Length: 141
Image (cartoon, rainbow, N blue to C red; front, top):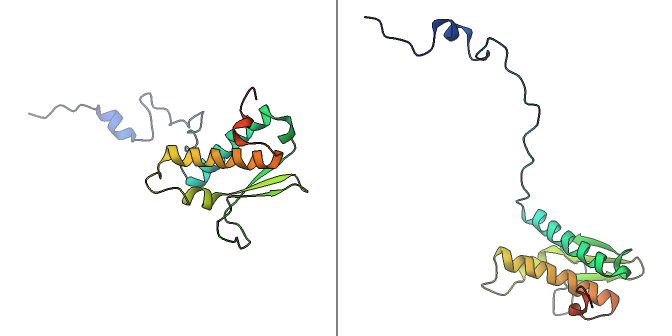
């Protein structure tokens, strides 16, 4: 006695190219979504950008200031490694990613502490640029 097939013989002969109704497969209308930002550099850029937009919305004197991201300072520092550089003549603040991320206290190397360190560096650099204390840069101050 022959076994029953679950797929009809005509469909088996058509091949995998054809759909259920004998049509060719169609391409997707919408492309797959972009991969999420998972890299350390991408997360750093996103955190800096968010903090900068907050500060620019709060303090008009930071509207024309360019915030740039550098990997490491190019000059020798005496003692402490700088986490940012201010250039008031060109109206820019350069934040150094590697010192900000790598010089966290031991036991504080997780996503939340990294984000706090990045935001803290942005606030402290902006405060130094405008000549205020970092806690004066919040809303309503």
